[in-house]
Length: 209
Image (cartoon, rainbow, N blue to C red; front, side, top):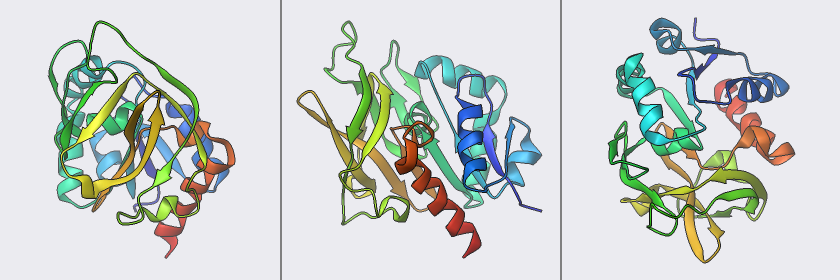
């Protein structure tokens, strides 16, 4: 029975914070890297804190990449958070060029396109919704503040998947995406107080409708 959300455990995510937020809104979850628990879940959350190359190394070592690709073929909801969102794309230039999961078209680059100097976007920042490309989970959150912590940004190839943007220094960057069953949030809903919990409440409604 598909009763739980699978929070993917590959060793580089704030899994317990996400599980606590889900519990707060009444969603059951399991922190796991086991294939059957992931395949039999109602949705997948791919978290991430740290560097893209190391994350992909750990994901491949546990063969989680193959499980996620199969889940996508099964049209299961896949939600990437922070680094987890970046991993959904084709490649990253963080430290070394590294292939991602390739579920979305685009690349991950440094904010100033200079890998020798890192700029960190840390703290609260507004998200500006793209009302042409809607994510129902964000519908009440235009111009609301979310919590970010990242030094790399996603450059999307398909602008129609971009559901919100935010600004850091002089750079306007993609802060969320959605394509069919795939959703990505560059910010951390689980660290974004009541605004972040609204996202998880909305996800809960999707499963009960």
